[in-house]
Image (tube, rainbow, N blue to C red; front, side):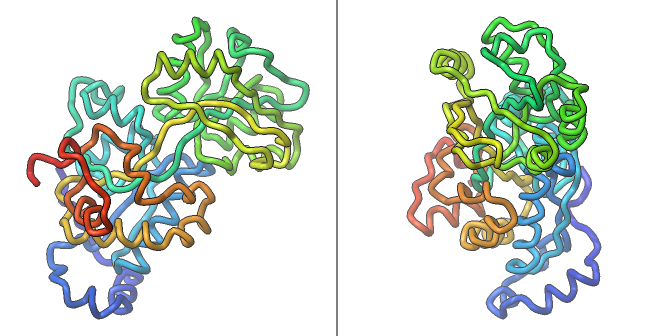
Length: 330
């Protein structure tokens, strides 16, 4: 595993000089000089959200932070586990697979070097058609040309399980959300199954030039998916989330969390978690999905050990952390 340190940039030096004196008084010798946050493809929600997190770390913690364009949550779990990134943004379905050794990237390796930090938002499944395209039932996806994000993203994890649960024979085409949106608008795809926080920037861009529709799951379809896939829950896309959508849309969703490598210093992680959760307005300004980035939503994680620095913060503000989420090292 490579060292979790990098050279301090000029920008990082300026920030270090500007941080509060209370932070300067801390022993920062073991802190990383800079950090990288694994997100996803450019144009997706994780990339934008990660930019907001990086800005918070730089301004309030005084450490230079960069956003890495990666293959998405599946890749981020492995990159953080291997120490190639300090932080990553993951969806809890793929994160569970990595945790128990079923990662598509490194099968057989339990990813026990990763630690949960804070809840981000729920990732809803948003099934979009454009122009005259439409769906009357999820079974209509059979045989369609379907876009599903990157090959290591959340859609590549979720959609095959949706297909299996409903007995649908279908495959996904993989690319960035921006590329898939353009293909949908040009008629090269029939459907794009977005699995990203709302609103998806690439879907909003598509609306500017095309009529867009979102498919609303029936109650029976939702019940079937929740029963078959324990990591999903029912979710509603509110009317007005997109300019084309004037009614609530029923779907399913998975929680997303920020994670860190276990070897990051406890006091550093404490400051990062505190800064992000106590500056929610700044996070929401970066992306509206951060309205769910609240300490009480830490309960959205029920399997991954929390980083001790995060545990310290939650306990200080009165949130109980179950023993099962406390790592063996403390």
